[in-house]
Amino acid sequence: MTPLERGKFVKLFNREGWVLDFTTSDFDTFTLESIGVALCSKYNLSKGKSLNKFIQENAGDLADKLLLDIFLYYETQYEPFEKETSDSMVDFLGNTIKSEYASLY
Image (cartoon, rainbow, N blue to C red; front, top):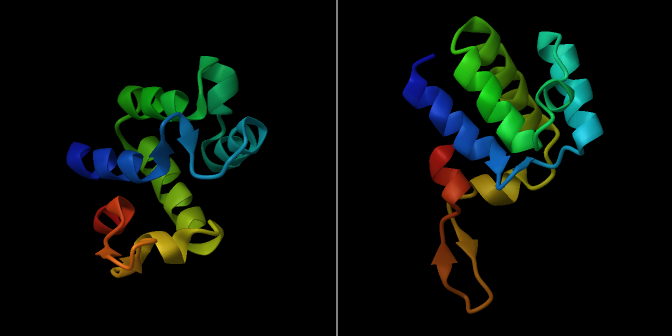
């Protein structure tokens, strides 16, 4: 995976310090099962900052595995997935809008 592709994945998953809908405990469990490292516990940072730091330090197969595992979670278990990736959402005024996540997806 290229650095640009990794950056797009991080933008898709990192929601201002949150990573999708994971709690800190759930994210540690998820990353431990995925790559053998509980990221928040290791870095003592928010989920988003821990993910960013790990990707910066491990720009290779391990980082790619984690991002692809989170992507699989995003597509299969993340509840707002359908709404976020729809090409035609409608706001409260009836205007058609495109989610920023739809273009990243």
